[in-house]
Length: 185
Length: 117
Image (cartoon, rainbow over all chains, first blue to last red; front, side):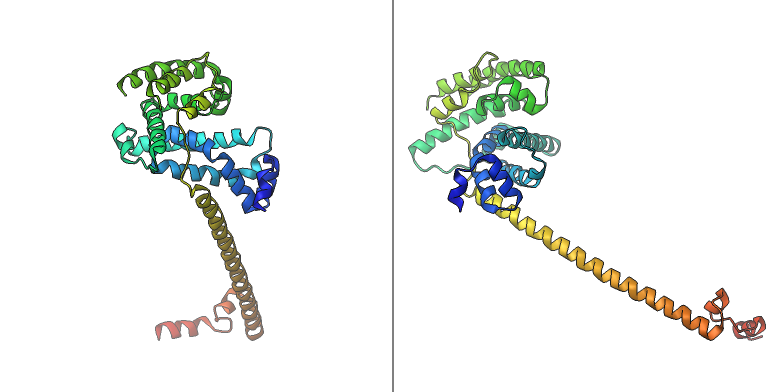
């Protein structure tokens, strides 16, 4: 049963999930978890909260599937949910904890180092995380969309519902900030 | 992992003229990867389907409660009808006084009963 969904297209998966098919939705989660992880962990850092927000993204997706009309790709739809939930989390944290200091995030890192290769991967991901965490969230989200998700400037503007000019100017300022941040790392 | 290369890629990705489609692949080649824990999918599925069951249970409870209220309301209406009927049969009318049990009582008797004078 599960094998049959490996070949299924997104429309089949959505229709089956709408009928309450657990395995179909499991396949959706398996296919798009990395996409969500790049956005959520890129924005929030590799913290324990990122895992919770990742789960929230798929829970929200499940309950909003009846509203998905298939006009856009499922990945874009998921991406929008991920961005919205992550930005809400950042706002919530800013309000209550004034977090995002590098120290605070490092304390919450959870890694499993299996071997040398895993340790190298961890270091590489940590470097990207450090650079991203140093950015203002409104610049960070744009860099995550382009650098980690590979969206064009126009696609980024569409997902974030921002004018193209705003995305371009923020991208330019983000690049300046990144140069400064990376000099110190 | 080459930190200098990764730094270059990060800065270049924010350039307007950069091809954004290439950067994720290049970063992955350098070992940059983002994913959730191995039991992430199971956790999501369990949360969705456990919460769904809770919602169904809540709906069932709500339905049972409204059925109970409906039955209580019907019993109440039946009791009121029987009461009015019995008042009408015993007092001959369903005026406010008869409803209060004073239908056939003279005012003086009531005063006597209340004040003893």
